[in-house]
Image: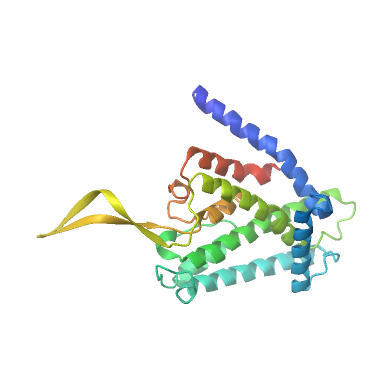
Length: 287
């Protein structure tokens, strides 16, 4: 390892440690008292509180009602099971759903089941090529949403573990629906928004074009028997990549938009985008 590599390593570790304290403090305040986040009179705080309370009313959740370990576990399992079923349905019905400019067919049942279970458990094992198999709707509403909720579930479990050590009595562990909402609304969504903007500044694409045809700088001639085929165009896959890449790294999900994942230039185009992704992967665990 040369001097340049050591400098990069020290900068990386130093930045993660530097960010871990304020981010950890922010996370603790989210679960202690959301009013202390940005000041009780802040516009952002009032907006987030209004959205949070609206979610509770819509879902019929009493945020003051805590759960014991059994209630918390059952709620967690039921929620993630429903999420997996929803993702499976989206993949199986993607040819009937909007935002499918390439007119992809439904994902085979075995592949859809494997993908749904994998994304539910945050393991994100992919046996398909995203740019040639999944529609924009399936990528955005199916996989990206599941990246959020599976990461939020993992953070909820970590918070419950911390509570069990911090509290004098462990009869009640909190409310899963409240923890899930706070984790997604106050932590994952803002962080993913910031990271997505930073990634777009580096060239990570974010659009709904599906594909884009470009001219080759050096046309290629293919010989097929007695016939010659001259290729002068190339089809490039497009899509809302930055938004999925952000939560992929922050939630350490690993399920990328393209088959090559972060080796694809549209998903990771520069050294800085790669460095941001590395920091994002350790940000919440360190915090």
